[in-house]
Image (cartoon, rainbow, N blue to C red; front, side, top):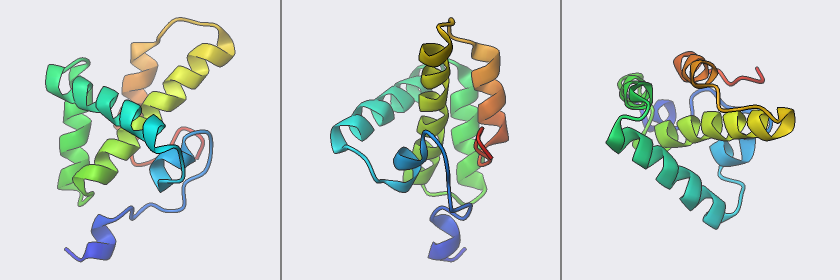
Length: 106
């Protein structure tokens, strides 16, 4: 598979989490979010994060891009929690993961 196909084949991204996906953000913020993604993968919490990571890798996304895409969904879920003053909704989070690489705002 060519390098261009491995690198964000679904560009351009739009919306709240586009900075994470595109790499236009605070390096400290990226580090924290990707650490959270890595922890979810390592601890299988929820297990769908690891399944999504593996699926994206098998579809040709680089490890970094797969992590960023998952991170964008994590940011979107946190944004919804804060914006709507509601609890974490694992079903919504998992549904968004299952739709990747399509973003919630697409």
